[in-house]
Structure formats: structure tokens, C-alpha cells
Image (cartoon, rainbow, N blue to C red; front, side):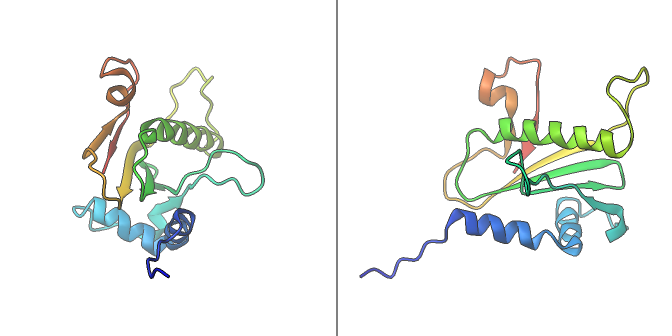
Length: 153
């Protein structure tokens, strides 16, 4: 009989999602990313995590908007996923789509829509070597692509 204990990945994901369902924890995380910001209040943050409670659709670990200026997406990974940049592209697209609906803007308007600046992060807790930054064009097209998306670790 072995005493090795492993935590199921889904359980780890659930703990992360549950922990960041509390706005005070989201605020603390953003302050870790941006220690230079000293005046952030909980009411400056609007959680916008994509979920699929009813239908099987796209969902992510954590998404939030800060002061209507930044949209922040965070994924927790214990196993390295080489498709993370593609997944983030899907997440940011859906987050912006919902943002336009929420702010009553349209991509078909003759005036340019106002979008919060994206910040994309992966919190990786595994053992495998990984880059400090993930580039969509590097990962999928050897750096030569008209589409670029960068994710910080």
C-alpha cells in the first residue's frame, strides 16, 4: 500500500475559482500584479469570469475589469498546456463580446467602441520548464502572424 497522495486537477481548479469568488481576494491578486497601485478599492473591480453553468460553452478561471480601464484574465495551471495562448484568445474574445453587450456598445457602430486594456496571466504551479511570457504568434506561427497576444507568467 502506498502513501502517495495526489490532488485531482479539477479539485485544484475548483479551489482557485472558489478562492477568487471573493472580491477581496481578487483585489489582493491585482495588487500583487501591480504593487504600484495603492488606491484600489473593491468597488473598482467587477468580476467577469466566463462560466458555463447552464450550457456547455467557454469558461475560464478568473476574469475581472478594473476601473473600466483594464480587463484581466487569469488561468491557474498545474500542468503545462501548450494551447494556453489559443485558449486566452478565445477567453478575451468572449469577454470583450460580453463587455460590449454590458456597456451597450456595438462592433457594427460607426464610432469606435471603447475597450479596457487586456492583461493576461497564467499562474503555473507545475514542475515543467516554461517561458516567462507566452506569445500566440510564436507558439503557433513561429513569430510570423498578424495576430499577436502575449500572456505573462
